[in-house]
Image (cartoon, rainbow, N blue to C red; front, side, top):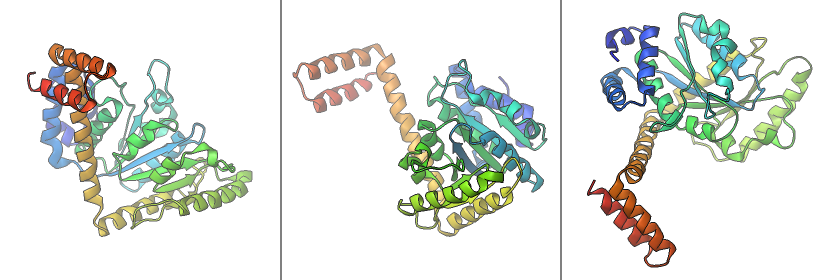
Length: 321
């Protein structure tokens, strides 16, 4: 699959889509080609602001992302929307309807919307999203929005690859904070209460106080106190305020000297995760290593050896691959 590198660098959307398809391929030859392409493009990456967006079903993520994306395009930005959906495409994760749900945004010349591929390959969905993000940056996209579906493990995946993590909430917070786990609140750089319009405005103000109280007792980084903002994506209210907040965060992180180290740390963490996955793959696919694993597991179960000795022999078996 030949990719026109220069066309991609010039922002050709068809070439960008083709390059992402190449990274999604499970063929080893395609994977090798994709990695060589990515490596050659690295000097042209890293110039975007990466924003993760999550929220419970029904919070209005699609409406918000479309309103946010359209606003950014009016500010002269190029916007890419990538979606992380851990569910099977066969069962119809909502992400598959992205271009339908964001119909106006998808028609903009300076917008690119891409659903996530299914997992199964090395790294699964998160790996594909990271690679798609690099390709979008090389194609000149200034802002990359990474959307997650629902609330769960995908939030942690996305938070580990973005600069700013935004959690969307509904006005009717309630005492249970809508079931949002403490861990996700700890990930949040901002909470945005959507649909804060009409009769829901009073509830939104109350919810804002709930979330401010919750965030005040959580540990966050030293240079930024997470904020709680109200907006109405449907009525285009406060979208500009949210972007202003993101740019303030970006500047604060640069001034504090943490922006680039954070990205470097994310890459290092991802590298070691891939190392562990490659080791596991070798252990499960190589006949000799698999036989050693099975034998050591049986000995540990029977109390015939210690877990440390078993682990050591399993690792030694990798040297013979």
